[in-house]
Length: 337
Ligand code: AMP
Ligand code: MG
Image 1: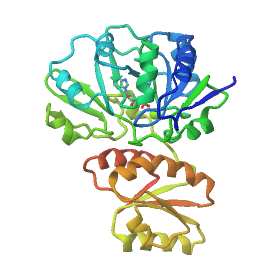
Image 2: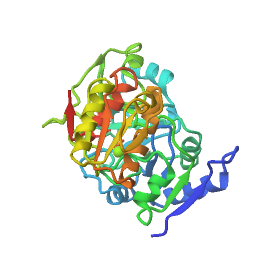
Image 3: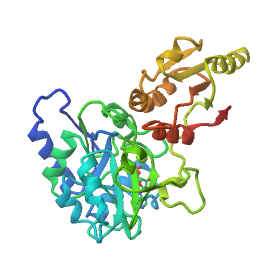
C-alpha cells in the first residue's frame, strides 16, 4: 500500500485541501495517522468495524485492547455515550479539549472492536488544531491508538510514524512534533469518583480539584481494570536500568558497567548529564514537561547508537512525573536502588 504524506507543519493556516483528502480516506474506511497534543494517533472511522480492524492489523495490536474514540466537541462526545455522571460536565469544561480520556458507558454507536466487546467506551477530545480540523471534517468518531507498531515507543513525530507504519497505512498527516509527549490520562468514570487507569498529560492533582480520585496500582495485574494494563508498553532494544539515587550513585553504576567493557548511554536531564560521564548522552532537557516531551524520541534514538546498556535517572512521581515513571517502569529491565 502506498502511504500518502501531507505536510502541514509549517503552514500558518491549516491546509484545507490536505485535511479533506485525509478525511475522505478515513470516510472510505482507510487508516490515516494524525498529530495530537500527546502523540501521533492512527485513525479509522470508529463506526466502521472493517476500518477499525485495519488499525489492529497495521499495529499488530492485541484484539482485546480497546481503542480511544476521538471527537471534535462535546456534542459528538454525547452521541457515543449513555448515563454520564454529572461531574463529567465539569471535567470536560476544565480539561477538554486536552489529554484526558473518559471511560464511560457506551451506547453502542461505535463498532464492537473499538471497545473490544466491553460495555464501556473511552472517549477523548484532543487539543491539537490539526486533529480538531480533521475530526470536524470527518463528522464521525475516529478511533485512534498511538500510530506505532505495538511494543515500540509511541510516535511523537511524523518520522516516527513513517519508520513504523509506511506501506501499512493509507496516509500520514504531518503536523510537526507533538507537545505533551506522553499519552493521555485515562480515567474510569464511576458514579461518584474516578479511577486513574493510566496516568498521563492531566495529573491526579488537577482532577482531584473536581472529583474524588481513587488510585489503582499500576503493576501488570491478572485481572486488569483496563485491558491495556496487562501489556508491557515497550521493550527497548537495549536493556534499560533505572537508577534511584544521586549523581554519585548513577556514576558508580555506569563506571562499573563500563569497566566490564560495556558502552553505556545515560538518559537524564541536562543537570545530571553535565556531572556524569557516559558513552552516549540522551538529553531530556530540564523540566519534567521537557522529559515527557523528549522521552519517546530518545528511547527510539538508542537503537541508532551502539550502546549496550541505557541507564536512566528516576523522576519524582508528582505532576507529569507520574506518567513518566509509569512508562519508564513498563520499559525497564532493572530497578537499582
Ligand atoms: P492507547 O490507545 O494505546 O493509547 O491506549 C488506550 C488505553 O485505554 C489502553 O490502555 C486501553 O486498555 C484503555 N481503554 C480503552 N478503552 C477502555 C475501556 N472501555 N475500559 C477500560 N480501559 C480502556
Ligand atoms: Mg499506544
